[in-house]
Length: 582
Image (cartoon, rainbow, N blue to C red):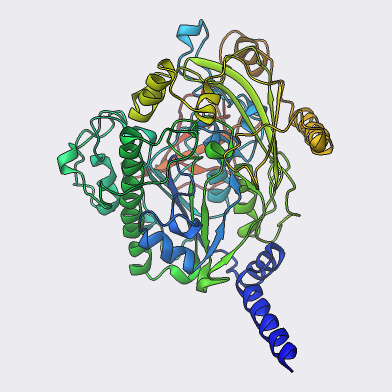
C-alpha cells in the first residue's frame, strides 16, 4: 500500500509537469487550431540581448512586463540569429534568406568600403524576393516599423505603410489587421559606453501619435545620444554582486558593466510595458500575436559579433490571443530565417518558394528543424571568415582563416570599459586560461562543443576521438548547407560585389515603370524582373504618405495624378513616373 501511494504521487507529479511542459508538436498543433484567421501581429524587438531575463532563468533584475508576457504566453529558449550582429540578422528576418546567400553578411555592406577600395553596395537576393512586410501589405495588412531598418539594402517604398519614430498601428483603417514592429535600442552595446546614460530617443514609445513631440538629438549616433549618468533611472542597485561569464574577469570594471547591462534591460522592460498597455487600452489583446525577441546575442565582449551561442542565442516570448498555451515552453530550434515564412503561415498564406526558412507556426508549419546555421565575415573594417552549425546539443565551427587571431580589434567595441579592461589584463598577462582563449594568435580549423555541458563553448572537442561521429555528422551538414544556399565563404568581398552585380562595375538600375491604359483601367509593369511597383494617387492636391503596392489594374478618378516608382531589392530604384488622368 505504501508503494502504491508513492507511485500515485509520482504519476500525479508527472501529469502536472506534462500539463505545463508540453511538447513542441502539441503547442504548434493547438496554436494552429485556435488562432484567429487574420490576427494582428506585434513584434517587440530589443537589441544585443542574451537570455538575461527572469522568464529564461536569470532573476538578477526584475522585468515585470516581460515576465507577465511569458506567464501568458510561450517561451522559446532556442531561437538563434544567423549572425552575431544586427544588420545581417535583420536581412535574414526581412527576406527569410541566409545573409551569406544574398551578399548580406558583411557588417555593413555600405560602410568601410572606401577604406578597402570597394564601392558601396547592397545585398541582392533573387529577383522575386520581397520584404516580408510587403507580402503582408499585399495580403491587406497595415504594416509599420518604429523605427530601425538596417537591412543591408534600401527598403523599397512598398515595404511599409509607416516607417518612422511615429509609426503605429493606431493609424490604420478601421478593422484593418496590422503587422507592427517596435524596436528598443536601450539595450544596445553602446549603452555600456562611457559616459553612461540612456538615449532620449527611447521616449518615442511614450509619445505614440503625438507628432508635435520633439526628441532631443534625434538621429545622432548611438554613442552620442545620451543623458548624463546622474539623470539615468536606476532600476537595480549599483552594489549588486553580478554573476560574470567565465570568459570575462570578475572585477570592479566588469561588475560595473554588468550593472549597466541589467539596468538597461529593466529600462527596456518599462518601455515594452508602455506599448503593451497601448495594445490593451485599444482592446486588441484577444486578436493579436505578440512576439518579443532580441536581434542577436548579448552586448558584452565575446558575445556580440561572435557565433558562439553568446552571440547568436536570444530569448523569444510569444503571447497568443486568449493566452493560448500560457506559461509553457517550446524548445524547438528556430532560426531568424524562419520568421518570414512563419508570418505568412500565420495569416494563411503559403511561404514563398525562395525562402530558405521553415514556418514553425500556422497553416503551413513545417517539420521542426534539426539544425541552425550561422556565419561571420567582415565587421566594420575587420574581416574574418567563420561558419557554424548547431543541433540541440552540439555546435560545430569551421574557421576558414585559422592563421588569423580570433579577436578582431574593432574600434567601436573597444569603447566598452570591460573590453578595455580585457585588453589591459591581456597585455599584463593576467587573464586566466578561459579569458585568454579569445586572444589566441591562431584558431583551430574546426571546433566542436557540447553545449549542454559547456554552454560557454570553452572546451573544444574536435580532436577528441569520442566525438568523431558528431564531428563527421556536423561537418557533412555544413558542407550540404553551404552548397544548398550557394555560399562560398572564401570569395573576397570585391569578387562578391562583381557576382552580385552580374559582372558590372556599377550597381544595377531598376528600369522605370511602364504605365498603360485599357478600358478605363491603369496597368503598371517593369522590365526589371522581380521589381516591386509602388504608386500614389494624388487628387485635389492631397498626396497620400504611403505608397500602395501595385498588384492588379486599378481604376482612377478623372483629374487625378498618378505617381509610380519601381524598385528591385539591391538595385538602384527607378525614378518617379507621373501621369495625369484626363
